[in-house]
Length: 278
Ligand SMILES: C[S@@+](CC[C@H](N)C(=O)[O-])C[C@H]1O[C@@H](n2cnc3c(N)ncnc32)[C@H](O)[C@@H]1O
View 1 (spheres, protein in one colour):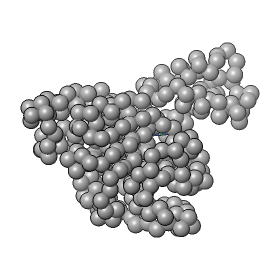
View 2 (view 1 turned 90 degrees about the horizontal axis):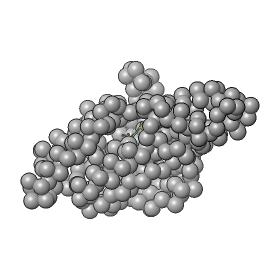
View 3 (view 1 turned 60 degrees about the horizontal axis):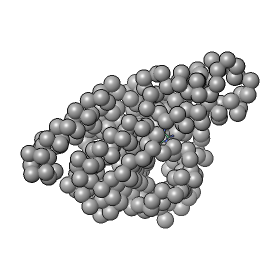
């Protein structure tokens, strides 16, 4: 790569607004991977490829409303203060949480499809759980009803620094026993060392990561230490048309081959596989 070094190229790639909150190491890793396969590539080629790839698996889900989240969090703090420093099951709290969820594309869609109904269906299959992990979480943990999740340990991981920082602040305000960290799901060794949990969510993350092929997903499912893994896929295309084949046949065949049983839940925009790890 002539005329520019990896650090300079990383800065250039991150100038795109939707890629700003990616950690540098993640961008550098993608550059190194491309250069590994195309050692003679010029920087413009690397720039174009890496930026497009990162945008597809990451940037396309960002909304402009992110900045508002901290304002909403302040509102939650005020409600809590007015309520004797307690978060209760409260319509105002719920309405503010909904506004936070609307700042992300996936959780906004899930709100339209009825989050509550989804969680009650999940609970009826999974039963009572004491720990939950959300991988590639975005801000999905904001959907956990705070009183219901008071005694549940929450682990949340994403590559986006802003999402994880926001979630840590949110957990504190909501008195939830949660922690959010930056993690690259491609790092399967780290995934294998994550805490053992009752339930692990992989909502709409398999498709963006799938460019590595089904093999990667298989290793990921095997490494996660959880009693249940709940994997979801979009059933609408990016242009919001219904897919002809919303089921992921390859995924069903894969978990069956691994000797795991699953149940499915269908909502307006998504299909969920509740996979029981044995
Ligand atoms: C379509 S969004 C889904 C967010 C959330 N699971 C939901 O359904 O509301 C995909 C998420 O995966 C995260 N992501 C993409 N690549 C990742 C990686 N390599 N490691 C960790 N997270 C990643 C993105 O930052 C984004 O939050």
